[in-house]
View 1: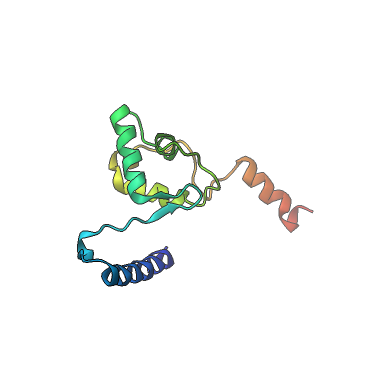
View 2: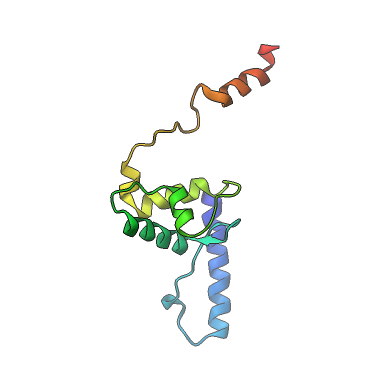
Length: 125
């Protein structure tokens, strides 16, 4: 995760330098968006707008990544953005973070993944 933010700081710094060279507006007045999902080109500000839309439609409904994507008119593609999207969802909408998940997170036992790991282990042959 730290590598992501270091790269982001580097890009932001280059953008600010280029912005200063080509604009009369001070960079401190500019909010730079961060791309969260490169498959769908969804930024952190888009994510915040999607959360607000879901909240407006039904304030008591748990906000999920799927509902936010649907509100933005997008579909989840590769899933590489899920960890960051879920982290931002928890930061931007604390109510959604308070609700316990029904799914097990990584490290869960049982299910298809456990069967696959058991079949692939050299001890099972």
